[in-house]
Image 1 (spheres, helix red, strand yellow):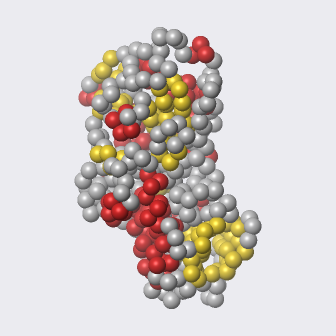
Image 2: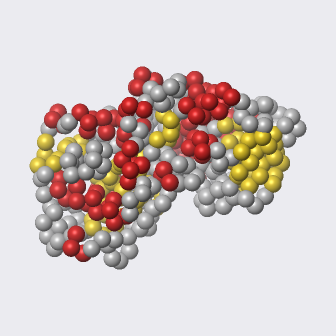
Image 3: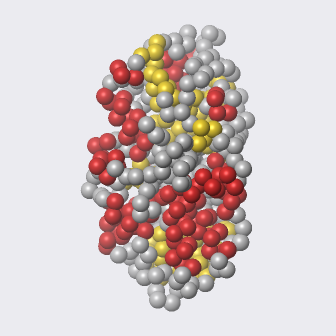
Length: 408
């Protein structure tokens, strides 16, 4: 079973000094937790989630409707605006390239790009290479969007995208090679453990399979999906890669040739047959055309006002498509106490609600660091989004210690 790209988020916390819970939570016999980071994507105001999916009531053609330009002035790009495949970095890259080629053929000269994620940077780079005047406007204080690598704990922690899925024929494969990125071939196999013992994967309860296949892949529970469309969407085949030195290295391949403004939130786009006016918290700029590359979650909450309003078909597609959440908890220990050569660990614990702290990945084979990642997707991610670091990290820690009988 393949992982979906982890387009996860900001809101990270880095442990320095004292643990965020009482010292009695860790006995002298238990492995020592020395650092943690936590994402909270559903509360990130620049994304409101991690990636799109075809929800019940929506169809593949809704992604195509999202991708269609409005009045030859307002274009859309991003993983959700890819007509054929979604929820991945390569989907965003393909979408950015497609829109750049459309604009290059349109005769427009001065182009605004709203958002400096992968699709925005790819489009800006391609258009500037074609001789167009391009200005990228980004609300965050960094580029990359849902690619976000943090190195504050001494290793590259990809809080956003982690995987390249299917290297055969994937346009992202060539970009990774050009960037000279170190690669690790991901092994999707794993084990299950509960209460200090390993159990057969065949004995996992049905709900645990649903968590692995839907909540942690689509960022939503299976009951909210158009399951037929979700399961039959085609994508690239071949090995899957992780990047020990961080996914953000790929961004170097899309640098230069365009103007870039950070910390600038766009709140309005006005367009007519002559121009497009983009208003942000600090400026008003005019362009021949714009590309809107903000995540689907931002479009759903209406943080950008369009004048005239978007056509009904496009707005309905935005409303129908789903946008899920998958969060990560990085736990860094002083030593490895789990199966060092196993990449994936399932912990169908009954101590917490289904979906909470059930899926783990071992980073030790990838980075050489004693680090585990815990994934919480869909309902679990939303439920935990309002909890404190003390609660979330403490519960994750107790789950994995219980799985290996190391809590005493």
